[in-house]
Amino acid sequence: MNIILLSGGSGKRLWPLSNDIRSKQFIKIFKTESGDYESMVQRVYRQIKTVDKDATVTIATSKAQVSAIHNQLGEDVGVSVEPCRRDTFPAIALATSYLHDVMGVPSDESVVVCPVDPYVEDDYFEAIKRLGEQASKSEANLVLMGIEPTYPSEKYGYIIPSTQDDLSEVDSFKEKPDAKTAEEYIRKGALWNGGVFAYKLEYVLSKAHELIDFTDYQDLFDKYDTLEKISFDYAVVEKEPKIQVMRFSGEWKDLGTWNTLTEAMDQPTIGDVTLNDTCEGVNVVNELNVPVICMGLKDVVVSASPEGILVSDKEQSSYIKPYVDKIDQQVMFAEKSWGSFRVLDVEEESLTIKVTLNPGHGMYYHSHMRRDEIWNVISGTGIVMLDDKKREVGVGDIIEMKAGTRHTVTAVTELKMIEVQIGDEINVHDKTKYEKP
Image (cartoon, rainbow, N blue to C red; front, side):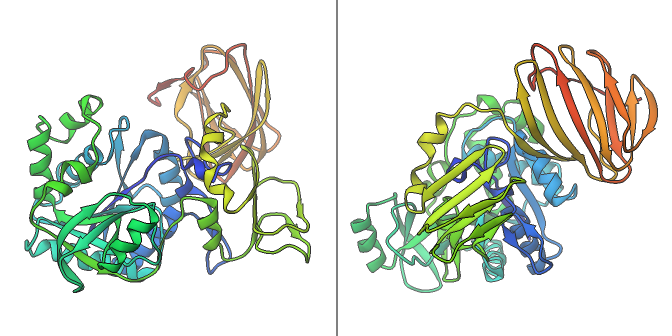
């Protein structure tokens, strides 16, 4: 089974846990059997491998999310990196070309595309497997999954099947309607369009070559920023006459807002939280190292993170995006391929960060021209390289790096450091990367 997971934008409706780097699919909010927490992307990846341990999983995403993907899923997962955002057709064309040219997937194999962040059970991925098998039969060029609607939603497009059978030809597509129109669609047997579909790899490659002048994956990647922004639905689906829809009636939730996300939480609180007996329908997610106490609240969501604090009526939380858009704030927490960092203090000419490196992982070998840095090791052991010279470090060691010094650190055990950046111009662009000697 070949699966392309579309990993979208920042998910600002889940502020303050999501930001431009840490999108909603990376928030660890679902409790596992071991008592730990996993994110949406970890949950989906685990479910795919449970259904098909040999599945080839490729995540189509932006450069900003690559580190978080490798941090949470490891280095084995495939990643098709979009150099810039160009909507779903260019993203799917690039990922399909990646599968063929980089991963060596034969052109006659089927591919399933789905979002990275649905809240589903394993039967969803069993259905996805059947979707891919149906595409392999070549009865249709596209096979869509149609979700049995549970209410007349205004958030989704609708698929009108020709029959009420589990597998049907598609009669028509309908754009996102108002609630009254959605009720009419549902009475006619309409299904939600959840953005899940399957095709033979050669079909989308052919469509990509029809609409884009390119030779192979690398050529498409190099000219990606020149491509037209266009959705896969508009470029391909709505123009394809040979199309089928497979009905899915299992659990399926789009956890795009706090209101829907809290419905999927296994327990009402995460973190250091106390609710008194008069609270009803209250959910709290606390990522800070300070306690949160809620008293007498009803149908409220509270979320506290280094990015900020949200206190909202659950229904009103769906309308948060325009308010978050007005906030211009430095990213305060991010997961990287080597570990994570959390900003502790921001001053005009200094920045203090807590850095955690996973065992065996290290930063890029790099330098900064406009700031000095100091590392203070607070736990673990590692190896520091300064201007090509290595030294072992442990608890209590202090490493100073003047502007221009090439430096990196690799964790032997889990390594935690307090990093202080000092300079009159501190920004993420002041970095030059080097090959390690």
